[in-house]
Length: 441
Image 1: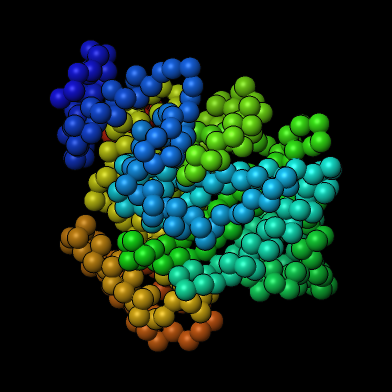
Image 2: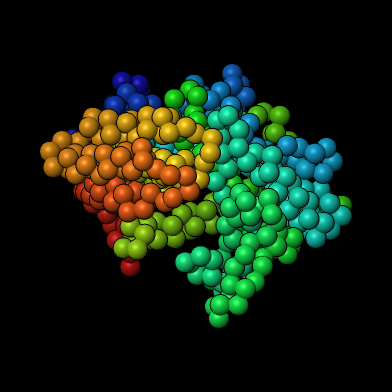
């Protein structure tokens, strides 16, 4: 065991005691390494560079990143990233979410990216026009390829309540564009009275709001389908050097691992503009997300646990963070990724012309095998039964026809077990339970 201070050792021992009591498997050597590293993570700079790979990020985040995955993430990153335009557009691509925590989450289902996009323009209006142009160009140029398919993107906000298909969307909510709508540059909808209306790409450009693109990709390294997303944090740099976030908020840098050392200058320029309260703001936003995932209509204790881990490791509650860290290496945590991959299979089946039916069925085989490895008894039988039904539906699938209730049934059974697992473990750790109860009230 590595040498760690007495106070840290006492915290470590409490984590081990709680894990043993709750039946959580521990890698004590890794636990020692992490607790020693995070308690000693001091210095003048919050940013750490891995000189061997060239990646960099916040010192706490870098403790959870496994550099052996960097080439895989760079390869997928080439699909999702935006190109620089000298003197006009500067970018810095990073991993976020579970992709940035590959030492913690052994079974990440998604490839989540985050990209800082700084637009140099004479006016904010001109910057918005440039963003609208490069987002549409990016979407159209990456609609599909040998190993990827664009599923949707978010750009702009609704200026009124509208109806699209069977769904009602409220004023101010983000607009989701399907690939064919991006190509057409418009969305056909109706108002609440049933009158037809057309939302054009250019008409929402001046208020871009939350910008995000989603693809399904064939992960060549792992031999499976995965969702790949890119969330943009877009800023406008005025002629006097003033930097303004186009969505009104400049994101912090507490959960990103940047993939290219050459983007360090643009990263440094932007984070200098971050508010002095950015850590408090970031934690407050995470707390709101946890509150959302504790409510019945969005109940997801797995997502709540991920955000609580980030809260605890940033606010110095290392004992609680260390315990949550271990949960994501538990066999039942694999089911959290199964839940995500069911959506990936659905999107690849319903919305893609790139992936052949055999590769999708292979992915479904893997889902079934994952469940068999993790579960036993009635729980295993119930989920496998739903996944086999899903398999049969996919094998008979006609292009463009929704899979329907089979997907929802499989997801519901998986989520029930995931929620029970994370709730039971977190509720068994007294300080984590107290924190959750505080957020609920």
